[in-house]
Length: 320
Image 1 (tube, rainbow, N blue to C red):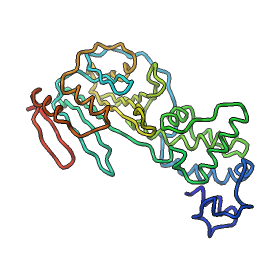
Image 2 (image 1 turned 90 degrees about the vertical axis):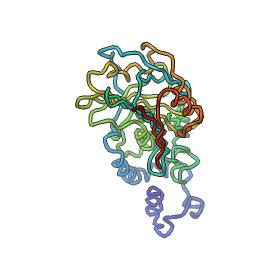
Image 3 (image 1 turned 30 degrees about the horizontal axis):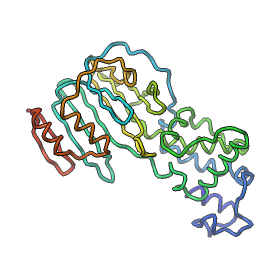
């Protein structure tokens, strides 16, 4: 909306600031990238101000993956779409399902405070502008003209149809790559629109590194050392959901044999134990996109020795 207002005001039409392109007189409707290039500097600086809301996350880029300093104990493997996510194979004290609301994402929490292990699984979603048909008129025009420009240069257009595409592109760029120069408007537009996708990555601490999941087109691992602990985040796109991600956040106490579990995601180099019955049912819920317990999950947890405690915000299953 801010971009649309800027362009219309530049045209000397402040009274039409809420109009669409179709509302403009025909002689004023932008039809080619020359119009955009001429106004890009003003539009770019206006858009660049919105990046301040992203903060330091806008500067995250891919780091070179390192070998973990130690092995991990046996894990259970969660099979989410085509991804294999390792979970410490321990007797968790609490299994909690949070329904979520307008302010809170739905999530599942596996925790054992005695071992210093906490795992949060959430479903996150990028804002609706990740889909081109949901962007405003000026944004759709920029997308179309930028793609035309890339085709004219015999280069593949930057694909921003899905949040995963946007994030993959964004992790090769920072705000420093946007200089607001008219001749580079097409590339800079794509960079600006993609940087907000970095909000899909877990924000774990002041110091963070991002690695791609090995042998996967999409999917990223975030590492962050904390005082007396180690945090990992794993973000993977949901199959058939263009702007939804599953995020797995691990907080592992220092000295734990699972401290470097995140480094093994996608490697196939961890000792794996068969899933307990309750985890199989939890896996089915996640693959169905559900965060409310099934009857089968409740039965399996009860047989595993968990008690149920229903709350307004969700349900907690705990061991004495």
